[in-house]
Structures are given as structure tokens and as C-alpha cells.
Length: 266
Image (cartoon, rainbow, N blue to C red; front, top):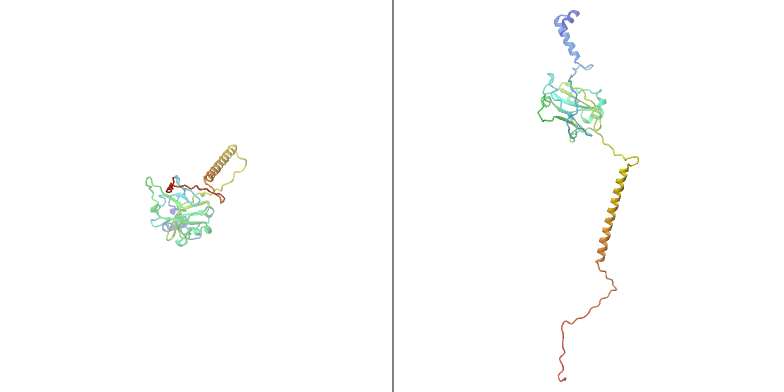
């Protein structure tokens, strides 16, 4: 309800002056304290992980978000405005300051100093209100292993387990236009170190180990027997000769010769 008709007489102002005063009050409510710049519009949306069953939905360096479909239809947002995803450590959300210009946008290389960076540049045309049937719309954060971390908007793999929190930020040439709420904490998967089993072994484990040991011993014995048998046969079939061995040779006449009797012999 317009209360300017009450405010005017109470302060001795005319109707026109009252309207001007109300406009100034409304403007002040949208200005960030200490900056003199209009605060971005708040969108009642919380980013969340995808509910679909996906391979790699949550890994050691990536996570998958649902796309914010139909969340940027406000008249304050134009088709030319840029929509960024802000990725921040949970303890850095309180110190987050929306960049005023494109030059102020932090890249992944600044993550260790600031605790947040902007990635996945888009516009509201990429987040329509209607979703085609059978079409999966997700955002995989940290999926680009080839981009340079110093490049603004690089979707570089995340370097730690987190926890992380995300929100969407709409910007134009004059600065922030609108923003969503921060998401809840997201923890990435961590590699589990193999631990040696401590304490006494169960009876079943002991039996299995004993059976495997016996089978291994039988296998080694069989292999050794095969090697010995092969070597023995090979050595036995080979004739050995020494320098002291002698051989005898019989002489055979292949042609029979007869002596002719001498003449005059009786």
C-alpha cells in the first residue's frame, strides 16, 4: 500500500515531494552499505547436486550440479547478462565480494588466496524454463583438465576435498545484477589408504591361507619333478665318448678272387 499520503502531511510535504521521498527510500533499500552501488537482486534458488544416477556424480576433483532452469526470468536480467557459477570454500562465503568488472573476476589460480573463483560462464538462454523430455541438463564442475588455471572462467579440476559451497551470480557491464542463495556444503570423495588387518585372524581365513599354501607347495613340487624328468631323459639319450675309447674295424672283401692253377700242375 502506498503510504505517501500519510507521510506527506505528517512532514508538511506536498504529494509530489512525498512521491520523490518514497522513491529515494526505495533506492536506498537496494544500495549496498558503504558502496553506494545498488545491491544485486536475490533469487530464491539454492544450487544442489544432481539427483540423477550418474557415473562420476561426485569424484575426488569434480561434482555435478543441476542446471538452474528458469531461475533468471526477472525483468532486471537481460539476455546479454552473464551468469557465473561461484565456487567457494565454505569458510570463504562470508568474505565473498561480487566483482564489479570483468577484470576483477577471480580465476582458479586465485583460489588459494581468495577461497573462491567464478566459472561456467553462461546466459539465461542456456537455462530455459522448459526441459525437453529425456534430456539431461547438468553442470559438471571441475571437468576441464586442459584449460589454464589463470584463465578467467576456466573449469579447472578442484584440488581438495572441500567442503565447497556454490551460488549463481548474474553480471553486466555495470556490475552484479542478481544472485542466488549459497548451496549447502559439498564434500568431494577422498582416496582411502589400505590398512593392514590387525588382530587375530578368523578361523575361515586361516583355513583358506593353509589350503592356498598347500596348493602352492604341490604346484612347485610338480614343476620340479617335471624339470628333473625332462633333464634325465635328455641326458640318457645322448652317447658320451672319451679319448681312451678305441674301435675295431673288420675288413670285408666284396669281390672273390680265384688264383689260376699253374700250368703243368697235376
